[in-house]
Length: 328
Image (cartoon, rainbow, N blue to C red):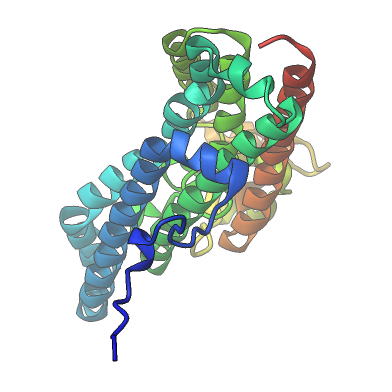
């Protein structure tokens, strides 16, 4: 009686191991697998690092909070401020990677090597080829930026009143937590892809994409979309001085108020020899504090992210429309 010898699936003639991706998506993955795999591996490493830092921060916060707020802030600045700033800097590189290293070479590389002409002469339509390439790049960007944002946010939230002196409206916090990193990364990806379609040279497209990220950073440096939420107001009689800032809130502006409700600059009468007489002559009766509460942060972030995401989707749609009609 003969015994049949089983041959592994990978070595059986005419058979291949099952694949998750097939057809054009598999081809796009294979073509850009180095960039896609690098993004996924770096994301995994970054998430592991930030989650470990979160664990260490939580372990430290328990006994440290018993020493009072001033000692806690001082200790946190010494122990974790540098690590947090480094992570915030790494988070700011996510849009750069999406636009320069993932988006710009996506189509410009095919145009430069002549692959685009070869693919578009096959049975696959140009629109489908572009849609799959853009879709897979967008999917990788969403997965990576979402994972990194979730890890960074989970690290920052338990000690949000300590990191960066509690100023959640700073670029280091506002632009790197919640939905904002995902939307910004998609916008940079869309711009990089559009530039790669517009120019044939990969290095030129990458340079232009890098230039966009630099301009974007300069324009938004120190800017938080305060117009997406209405600041809250606290008034104190002028004799009691400036109102205190509520816990977790960030300052928006300071004013002095006259009896008719008119607003004057915070420094009005400050340099006068007789400030009290100056305030009386101007009718100033109160000091006003305008601030944004910590609970307003999610709404501001989602509004900002929605506008950025709409711009990214518009650029991607325009790229598909343009790429379908122009010669590659």
